[in-house]
Amino acid sequence: MKLKLTFMIAGLAIGLALPAFGDEALDELKRRVAELEAQVERLEATEDTAAAVAELKRRIDLLAAEIERSRTGGAVEVDPTQGGTFGFAPAASKVFRAPKGVSLGGYGEALYENFAGEREDGAASGRSDQFDFLRQIIYVGYKFNDKILFNSEIEFEHASTGKGGEVSVEFAYIDWKPAARVGLRAGMLLVPMGFLNELHEPPIFHGAKRPEVEQAIVPSTWRENGAGLYGDAGPFQWRAYAVSGLLSSGLSASGIRGARQSGARSKSEDLALTGRLDFTGVEGLVVGASFFTGNSGQGAVVAGQALDARVSLVDVHGQFERRGLQLRALYSQGSIGDAALVNRANNLTGNKSVGEDQYGWYVQAAFDLMTLGSPSQCSITPFVRYEKLDAQDGVPAGFQDDPASERSVLTAGVGLKPIPNIVFKADFQQHKNEARTGVDQWNLAVGWLF
Image 1 (tube, rainbow, N blue to C red):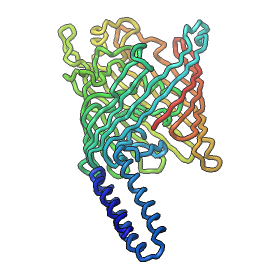
Image 2: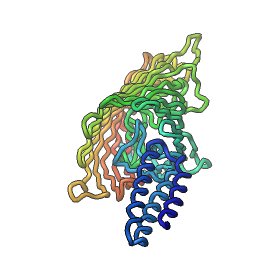
Image 3: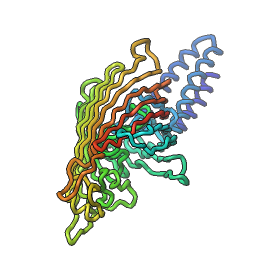
Image 4: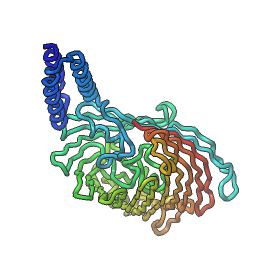
């Protein structure tokens, strides 16, 4: 009788909690409740009632704890070694793995930069060392059911809005997946280009700083309002979105980074298309390509002529991982149409011209030394990266390129992870350019995700 009463109370509590679960989780919970019912029948047939009650109570407590965690999203642990979901990094993917309801996560990083006193030509660098709390990110998601969820990233940059920092929405969208292999996203989306624009949580990339190529040529973090589809087909994963285009008034000699509208009252006279296709059919291998194309004039007229200023950008990328080894390579190339008109509209002269053509590439190798011994959560990973880029690879007739625009960066360092979610980084960067004004630097950083 005592066993039956205990089970009835537990069943009532579980029944009240069922709405918190999605369909798959609900089926699993029903299966486990049925197992408990069967165990009750077996235990009632034994003489050791006290032991039976204790065992039943233990199993009920486990179910109750699981139900409580499902209500808060706290049941989801983030394992960076397992990757993300359809274009999102591990912590950003947390809501996809939540059973239902609210999901919270985040990441952050702080960076110390120590600059050389001289440039490569021997002149004084004029650079001051800096210690910056780069960013703290909060992920907030809500899973309505197994097919529909909301996901968002809110970024706090440089510690204080009162001292040059800012608060921004990095992405915020509704995700509806009506079929197993196809989903729809709408809201503020990450442009699916390069490696780091989508996967920029500090413990999952090497180096205290993001690669120059994925800042100047592929302007991470790049996000815009729009909608589109994503999915997979066998060994291929793909994403395709229509988003607001860039804004030509922000184009400059340094590239397209300043032309991002970032969802803030984005002018949408000109839309853009962006997409990505990756092959993941071989364990440890990712090979793919992505693109962005769209006019950036947004209705502007220069000297009586409509300004199209089409911006097109493509990249090809590949990565191979096996045991402790990681090899990565990326090449990106872009163009800006109506470059002379853009210069005129933006009052750019001489070597300040926008580049009709841009390019950037890098290769990177890393190896986790801890994989040489017994399995461990800790990792010690030396790496080296070489990159070359030029945002003014070609300029319109009558303008000149700035020799400093053609540059290379050699980065070598190490990352220490006591656990996969936390990293301490140290590296050295050698900066060179055609004007010989490069300034070398040492970097120290700490990063985390949860």
